[in-house]
Length: 198
Image (cartoon, rainbow, N blue to C red; front, side):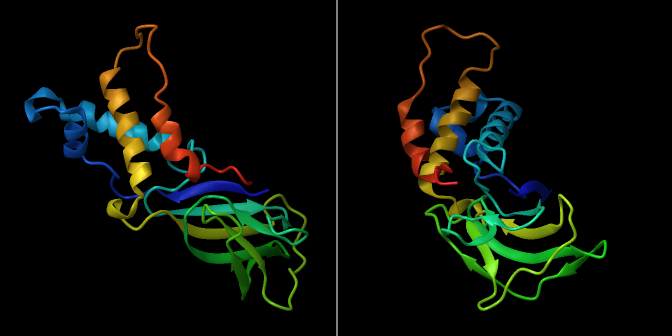
């Protein structure tokens, strides 16, 4: 199993304050820009990255994943590495520990076994994984994940972000009426992006 670390955070936000104001039907004078920005940041952090509810990268960001060795990757008996942080924009490098130093792997195959656009890495055709030093981080994979810009983020995710950010803005107090209920639309919007397979 891979352990993940974000190397570079995304630049910018998916939502703008103007979009959230329109969603909430607020005039510019009715909303503190700092409160709108906090609601947007909270909504995006709730969904974004490996630890987010979707295990989905919203805007392009750089990641590093390490593992002791190849394992199940969603392709039957094949042993590889499943990078389960969709959508993968680019696998930058694969390295293995040999003699106490990381060595670059020259070639590998990338397959997309699931609808979420996570990627399974396998040895190059006709090849095998090299033997790495025994270490919890014997394999290191660097990759970029996320959509290239805010306009490329799928509509259902954008709509869900507006719902969550709107809820955070409207319910800024620590205590709320007991009659609040979950909006089922949120689950419907996000269902196809959730990490259900791996």
